[in-house]
Amino acid sequence: MDVRLSTTSYVVLGMIALRGPSTPYDLKRAVGHSVGYFWHFPHAQLYSEPERLTGAGLLECASEDGGRRRKTYSLTDVGRDALRGWLASPTDEHFQMRDIAELKLFFNEVGDPDDVYRLAEEQIAQHRARIDDYEQMVERFGESPAAGPRMITLELGLEMEYAALRFWRSLAQDDLDGLRAARRSAPGAP
Amino acid sequence: MDVRLSTTSYVVLGMIALRGPSTPYDLKRAVGHSVGYFWHFPHAQLYSEPERLTGAGLLECASEDGGRRRKTYSLTDVGRDALRGWLASPTDEHFQMRDIAELKLFFNEVGDPDDVYRLAEEQIAQHRARIDDYEQMVERFGESPAAGPRMITLELGLEMEYAALRFWRSLAQDDLDGLRAARRSAPGAP
DNA sequence: TTCGTACGGTCCGTTCCGGACGGGCGACCG
DNA sequence: CGGTCGCCCGTCCGGAACGGACCGTACGAA
Image (cartoon, rainbow over all chains, first blue to last red; front, top):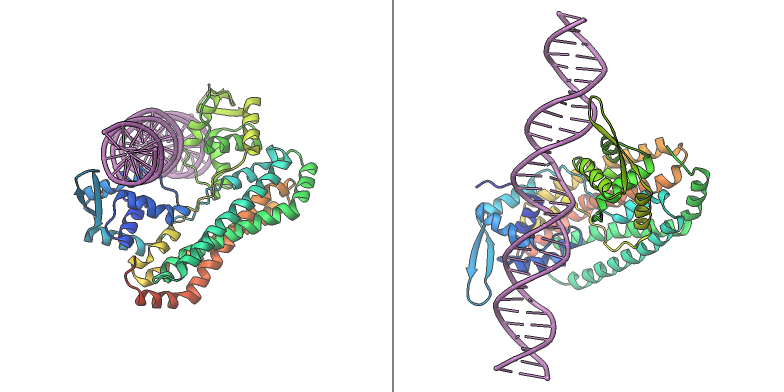
């Protein structure tokens, strides 16, 4: 009856709340072009998690048989309350970046100086591409009703992308020579 | 002999490369005030992962017995090469934010309008606190040799924090009324 | 009708995660 | 000096997350 609700659970609840009754596959696609941009989910969980939540009474499941066995899940009142409670509760954890490029940068002393340069180039390209995606989404989405509430998150994403792009650009342009010099003058370190 | 190397593995290798021979507990503390700020690790992995890596020949283990059984791990040449190879390899994945606040913002339509306001306040406080931490680290660290290479990552962290802070601030100040209005005018959505 | 292919769903072996437990150690008190 | 108390360090374990492999099902094309 009482299951631990993880962040994953709330994403499932939230998606169903926004979209209405959905199948796992619907969720998969919806997540793919929204939340998925900043929080990764393996698709398998979008099948197993609704089952768990149904067991806990937060979702209802309508099995539609005939041909492909597919299940449509919808929110119960309990589920909606749980989601609302989460939205209203304080958020204790700080965000995690989970940026492999940042890790590589952190360990850059161990490798070849040119690695950093290549890394920066890569990152610039990647962030630019992502920014293009986002900006297209803004354009396409800007006309729709309900643009306000949904667009906000996109704006946060854009801001973070811009910040990252600026950083890697300035790294590639200005700092690399300085970095190299600093490294020559202090090859080992405590 | 050939083990899958995950990001975790490279963090362990990298930490040992930067610090020299270390015990798991050393790693735990070192991670705690560096990499840990942007990539979270449960401590248990810092005990199990070095063992795996030793099995694969990337680390060497010196067991110091007597009293508490503790093990000091150091890099082998194979390990150093693996790390260097990783640093030189292209980075395919884009970063993930893993920001619970961002999720809550995304689902804000479902909850109470005031939730967003409180969320923003919280986030402003949290990001400010984090920025203070970072800036103190910059001050304390700026004097040390090898400041250049190590400080760079910190700067990226700061940039991201500034961007987040700016976002939540502007959300709290300007946009909330607009958001409320938009929501009133488009209560349901496709 | 048959084949090819994209779609939708399931399974399973690994890794991750974090809480809980437990033994060791120094500090402090009697 | 000896006890015990609280922190330090390490381990264990169950559940969640992960992702890749696999397998049916539908549907259009040949």
